[in-house]
Image (cartoon, rainbow, N blue to C red; front, side, top):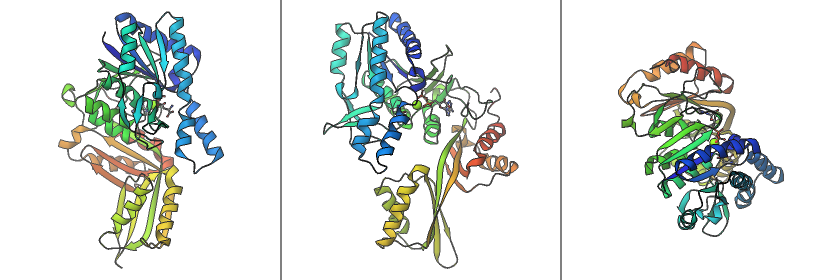
Length: 409
Ligand code: ADP
Ligand code: ASP
Ligand code: MG
């Protein structure tokens, strides 16, 4: 039988009525003749609840216990989905990550998938099971501990199953009609795309468009999995993420992404000598700080200011790490300034490779709104800026207008 992977996010399984609604979408595919692998997230809000329980016990926690607690949200939704399908007369059962097993490395909290065993599930499909419901987001390490794949990780579970079982397609069901030119919750002018390239989606996801977890797009690109994003609550035809050559029309800019909770950290007055950046960023990397943008300003006195951005929830870790390094004399600096009220806004488009002037247009649009740019980085197909968080929505909206993303191509 051909196989299909269908993933339902938190809002799509947030109560038993919605689980029934998702199950009816699964039933349609079963009736078409597919054997279906369903990946479910925890019910909406449940993972956040579990994370805050962990934090209420300790903030510098054992990541293995964090995973044991936080992975549990998916177990209930998997069981409920299997029961609902059984009530509809579909032969279905649930599987937790360790039962498959889905093996990950031991980077607890953001583990990477190493292997998915297909044998047990395939045997069940041969015996007549039509739907395997898999608890997303979770796996098992080689030393027998539960692991999780990072927030939004059920998307990655879904793509990994689609690759392992050579499914015809991986459908991601969520609470919007597909992938839009910007987050539709930030601008109502955002337009749904019918197709987007893996490469552009990879940039958008890594720059904050949480509609797909970055790692899921990476995997889909590597294994050439046709990936679709659809709405659980409508019959809209969604957005296909596919190879660039399958997309006819290409705008210079395809989308605007934002990442709300960023921080800007500046080390004032560090020595201007070879090896200083390696030392600072090596130390931060060793402690797991996710450094993103970096700017260095040389001053006249032979010293330099080093600025970098990181997620706001890593400010404490970065501060402790830098203070310790100063005490140990790994490197020195006069002062550390943390600005915790910044957001990152990015424009993304493959067309930028062959078009000049995108940066100028972006900066002009922000200047027209009197928005100050604090840090800039660019790559071949994206430009990102750091700005004050209070201007985040305005910046997304004005860039969306400036690049005419709401206008039909
Ligand atoms: P799920 O729980 O189904 O995994 P998520 O909340 O993780 O859903 O992702 C869907 C959300 O992603 C949407 O509700 C939307 O607000 C947000 N989003 C951000 N950027 C985009 C975009 N460019 N296109 C569509 N949705 C986006
Ligand atoms: N439940 C997990 C989260 O909220 C995984 C997911 O929904 O993809 O991050
Ligand atoms: Mg998600």
